[in-house]
Image 1 (spheres, rainbow, N blue to C red):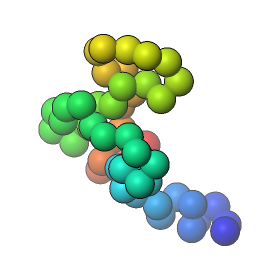
Image 2 (image 1 turned 90 degrees about the vertical axis):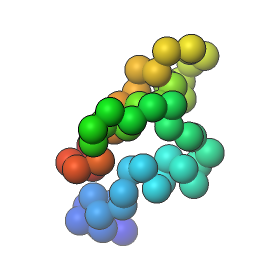
Image 3 (image 1 turned 120 degrees about the horizontal axis):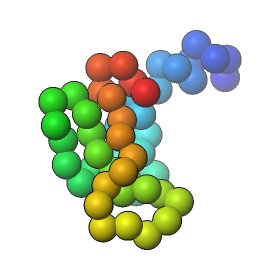
Length: 52
């Protein structure tokens, strides 16, 4: 896989396949709880339009 192929993967789909479900969505921002620690308030944001 090259960098262009990696950039074309939709983060929202990848996270869903890895078992991470969004906690909330505001506009094109999708919020998740951090995959690195236990938390109650989501702090991990994905921009759907920018795929970042």
